[in-house]
Length: 303
Image 1 (cartoon, helix red, strand yellow):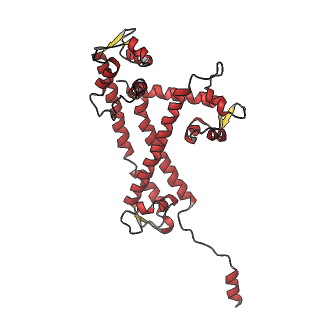
Image 2 (image 1 turned 30 degrees about the horizontal axis):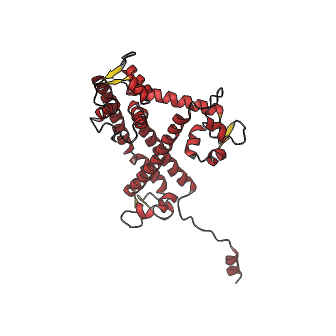
Image 3 (image 1 turned 90 degrees about the vertical axis):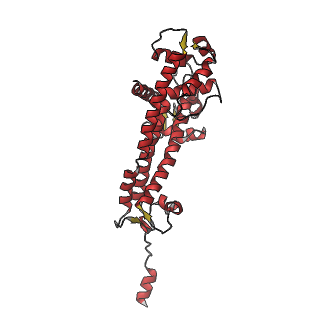
């Protein structure tokens, strides 16, 4: 009886039902790293001259720009020229300025080394558009090839999770994410996750994260384009900085940012030291870093 009583009084020790926090964290970090690389590669083409041209043309001619993947439509440049010049044989600077395309015209004229030319002829326009479309296509192909190469990273995580080294994941070897996704991850329904099944699961998670990161980067860059240069005179800051700084301490906290309805991912990208506060200095340095990155990407596209 005394022995039985001791057993009843003894604390119950539950065995873990899934992989530990360290394994979960390792998996999450690996996926985030791959997704970040994926998003950055996806944005490189959009930051190039083709991406800039598409943004400019979409703003000037909403809904009229044909959609095409980079490098997939050989006549994309012809469609652009028809938009800016109609049936004419040249794109006149006066027409470009009237359509809000003055900066694009100046950029193209400079790259074509035309000087202060009053127009860009059709053959000049098509020659340059063909170059930037081809470069964007090559960058897109490179990005897609690298995006498909997540197998090695998945195998590294699989090795960490497979604690008994039997080549399958079961029971306590399953990470939190894998347990949540098990109905889809366990393709053959045998209750075990093979290395190939884990690769598919890893790739799906990376794709989803990458798409979210890409969307956040796009939104951030659109925010910067729309708000830069509209700040109060002498501050060098956009109006939204002062608006979001509700306690007027000269910086924006993550709480203030979220309260303003902004995406957390955008804040984290600008918060360079990761302390949860966006200062004026950080914002200025962030803009400089983005500008330098944009210039570098454009240089890499040059023949």
